[in-house]
Image 1 (cartoon, rainbow, N blue to C red):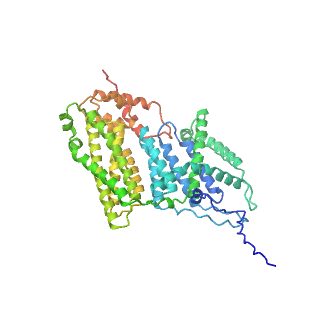
Image 2 (cartoon, helix red, strand yellow):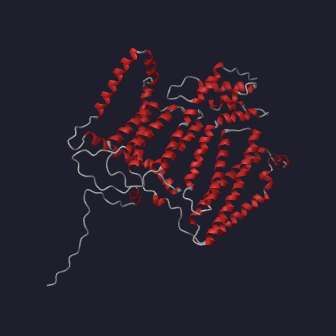
Image 3 (cartoon, rainbow, N blue to C red):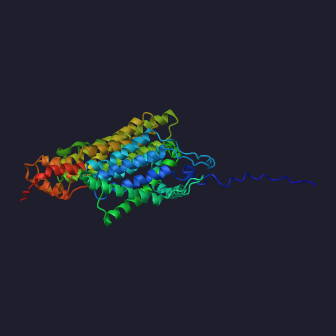
Length: 515
């Protein structure tokens, strides 16, 4: 009798995990292996309360900087202080493999995020603060998720909303563990703890305020008037701040592994497939620069000598197209660097020569665009849009210089982060230069007629520059318009250096002698 061989069954995985991830997304970001600890919960809660108490929603102010510092400190504390395992619990399951530890660059990005939020403390221009706030979301993502290539940076940026959603059950399980701890520890009554803390603060704070008038005044300035609007603002800020801070803490506790997306080289193409199109593009760029040399650098003379050509046609008709050409060229350069082969010496020579020539010719296009906008602003004045697009064009030129430097080593994994860092530094430099004051000073220095209505729509940051030209009738009218933006007073949350300086200058109250 022949006995059939038994088929060996694969071992059954343990029912209590950890189970292997089945999707590529989860393999790169498996998540946290345990619930949020008490330190993390306390840090997130304190930072959210500070945000609710100090964040002004209607204007830039000191509260934004306080909120940024509190959030950054909370994330550092939640990561730095290890969570203690209660006595009596079994040993934890094997730790999942996570991304590499945060390096010095993460702390640099965190510092840049706080610096961008600080713009609202020193500058009152709403458009400048909104731009800084948008860029702060990118630097904050780099501080939390990291990433070296553009793909990794984009993936980390998209992980933010997902992290906020994944953090909700993580925080909920942590709160449940705090309320019902294992190992025989007494339960923590969170609501009772908050109620007792609030009662102690109210009772002793009222006694101290009644005992000392100076302390009562300080307490009155710090604590806002509690009404329906204040409570609604607190609830709204808490509803936004808690998921954001929890998601950031989740990314810190369970960082995603973006190393597989950091590879800057893709599937290589044949040498002819990339060299011929880009070579023809280089010839087109060279022909444009050579034939249109008078148009590119003719400036005022070219406008005067050409019949029917106005400054508006000269500057507007070419600036936006050339700016789009610059941005599109950066995309072409990035694609060529990713898919062009570089195995042989001929491949590397072609890559350096073609991309280097294209980048150099694009720098000429950048210079042409900057000259065009200069001609236009010298004739019709400076505005926020013209100043901002000129700064963007200058940043494009700096990125092209980085591309030329990167061509020496062929491989440049530092380039995406360096380009973003250059843009952040340029934005901070623009904020330090006080753009609204630059616009007002540039326009008032001109001998032509000034658009007083436009200057009156600038922020109070422009008041010091306008006050320097008090001898002009237009200056008094502009100062009177700017003073209308300063009606009322700011509390400590809304305190802003630009508005305080403007109030100090406008104390006398300018009289508009508008004809």
